[in-house]
Image 1: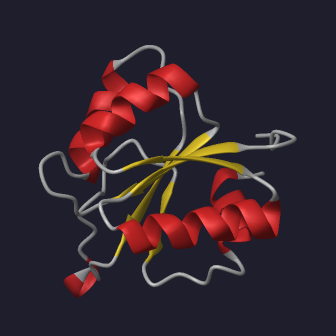
Image 2: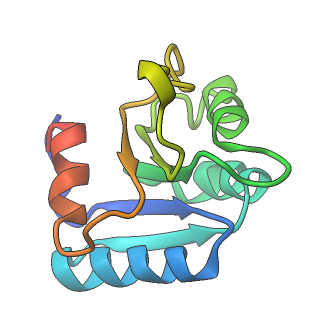
Image 3: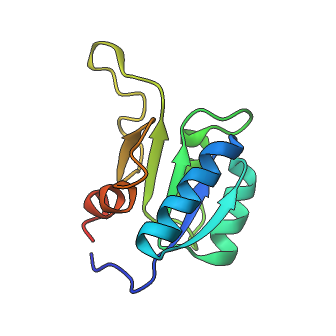
Length: 127
C-alpha cells in the first residue's frame, strides 16, 4: 500500500493525555493530519465523514470498545476498508490475543514511543 502524501489519521482514545500525545507525535514528527474521537460511536461517525487513511483505536474504552468499534466500521461500506491499528495497554497472557480474528491491520502496545510512532504505524500499514 502506498502511503498518502499527507496521511489523515483518526485517533480514538478515551484518555485525553493519550490523544494529545499521539496528536503531537504524528503532527510534529511526521506532518500527518490527525482527527480525534473520544469513543467508538464518535469514531464511526467521524470515519464516515472524514474518510481517514488509517485509524488508531484504543482497545479498552467504556461503552463501545475497540473491537465493537472495528465491527461497526467494517459493517459500513464507506469505512469497511479503512485500516485499523489497535492501541492496547493490555498485555496478552499466555500468548492470548484478544483481537485475534478481528479485521485489523495490527496492534501497538502502550506505552509507545512518540518519536517512532509514525514509523511504527507506517510499518504496520506497509507505507
